[in-house]
Amino acid sequence: VPTFLPDPTALRVSGFAAGLGGGLLVEQAYVGFHSRTGWWKQGAKVLLGIGVGFALQQGLKLVFPAGAGWIWLRYGVFGLWIGYGAPVCFRFLNWEDRLRNRPPAPPTPPAS
Image (cartoon, rainbow, N blue to C red; front, side, top):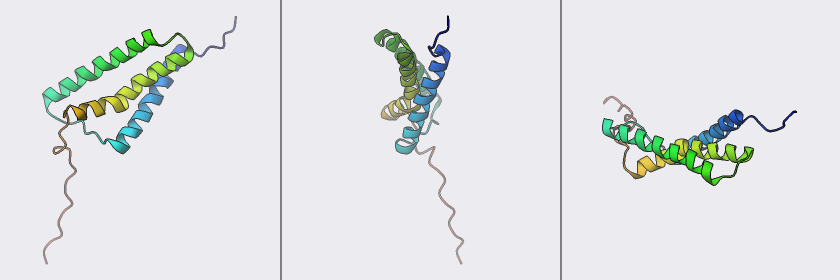
């Protein structure tokens, strides 16, 4: 019996890619988060990022009904968290060292 439902793996991958891509575009345009910082902040970012991401992915499974579009949306929200939500959250928590990540000043012209 042929089925016309999309492959669940393709839905997950495309939803995640759409959420991540859209989130990264918005983050780079409006937030400009710099990921380098001290080791303890890096560890805290990993734990919080993975924890919230897992909670979103599993929690939305309970909230959204079964169906192809809902699978795509659930993984899209997961990708959006990684691309946009986590960097905004980390900046709000001051887990970013902006001075360390500042681009170097342009060279001064030699005195004549």
